[in-house]
Image (tube, rainbow, N blue to C red; front, top):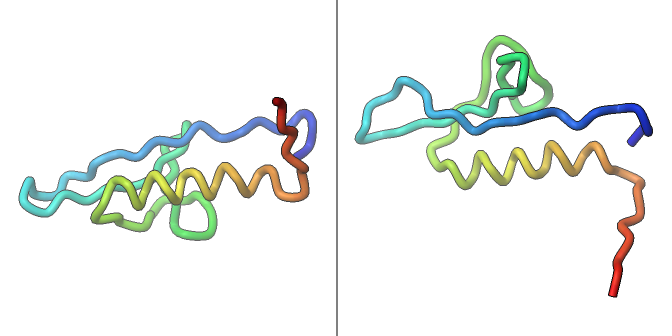
Length: 73
């Protein structure tokens, strides 16, 4: 990750689906939706908010590829 590059602010948001079958989207701070590869006008629907949250974690981790984590004891 570049030193001056900021992490995106991501949210898991419910869609206007029915209460019986809720669906969720991943949105960034500019209201763009995650389509599985990048952010744009349309997005992937998730049936489970935990699956969407796991994908958010994967998106954030991708910003740290090649960075060795530091562990403190």
